[in-house]
Length: 338
Image (cartoon, rainbow, N blue to C red; front, side, top):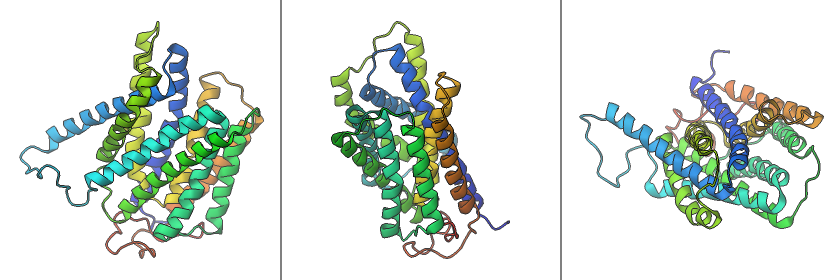
């Protein structure tokens, strides 16, 4: 069909790339932990701080090339179509909550349970929030896709066995999922209002707030790595700051502003698929039946939602919660898969 939205197609691609990039962060972190004594909170701080440096450099270069001779807005005044500083700080706080609570969940209940509860609860919270806050309905097709994705996630992450469920860890994981859901819903809502702003700026604010909040925790854990292979550690930190942080979050905020919130949450489950593929192909982990089955279930659900989203016609009427005039950033009306 020729009536699909090219902007929606690009947004879906951005989300797929972002999810795949996020999946590489786990492998990079594993290599960092093997090469140094850096802890997870310190790694998160350097990820945010390094990502901020990269983003500020990109913004400075872009401003130098495109801003010559243009009048600049007064300091503290948001440009039209951009979120306020307060709104950006809230997004950054949600980003920090998502990251820090996830690591707390992993510490309390292990990687497998922490991951499956955080990433599994996220789509449910997002679907409920999108339905009540923005009127985005989750039809039978969409509900089946979400259920299939969650089943695939559970099989993929818990299939190896040995997982131990601890209530405190589950609580941290649910708090992390709430932060992720809030971040996704805010990005979508701002996109509906035409106020999503520059995704590079949003990402820079998010990682800046994250770096400030994580600094005392990282300092208590041990901020500087002790290693015999400093060059390798620095290259890995540069990769984590650049690809799964600066690039991936800029793509995520771009896509999340234009694609239905529940669809975003399911597409981002490509992250554990990417991580599992890297673990098998690069780190030499064994390919199990659980990995294959979970990957197939997840990718089938993601593919179904991508196909449904890409078939939605551009420029349709606004949904119940969408204001008039937001067609440029709003995907078209919901398809049968919803």
